[in-house]
Image (tube, rainbow, N blue to C red; front, side, top):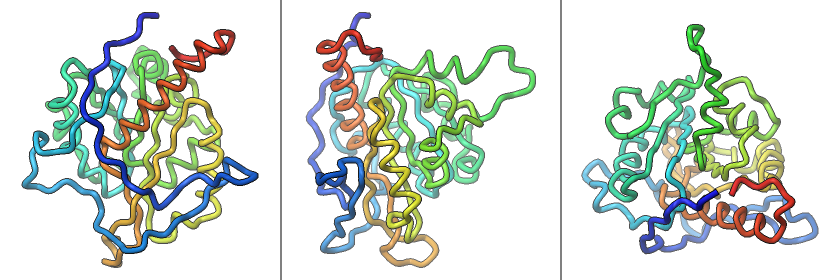
Length: 256
């Protein structure tokens, strides 16, 4: 398979994540590093244009599937879709909205910002083709942004009760999962277990969340995804790892 052309941009500055993978005897077991000082969530300003956003890192795919779930951070999706369109000429993006994501963003707000489709995460009764198969075959990479604790848990447990989940369970394409968590979510034993399970999958990269303000309490105790450029950078890193792994071990069934 011919490798897709690479769009190159200067990488965005690295940040120190508050959540990292433990490097001790259990490499899949997460540990928590608390930031020394809380900082606001990385939500784009309403006055900011995509041209003013961080520079785009390299991305070696031509078809990207974005899955957005029911976090208030889904309201940033129109901004980031504009940024993708401005940053990667020729990149085709399709979006899947879960039922809970539709509380925060509409199909109409996204439809003119992508070259691909904006779909609901359900199987229409009158649809002839299997939506999950079409998604899995079309996507060269997949980003879940933001990923709620509920969606992350379903993905980690191997559930496949929606088109996006079934596509994610079946694809060998690289997947980046960027969680958005309520207060206490980062320390939840269930979440930590799901993080470990997903981190062990060769094609999945878990993107550490950053501390942000809870819209309910007003305190800096929620956890939000980093900016999309940082997520794309980690996604591309995993894609390159899959390519290298296939070259070293061609007997393994890698995507590229």
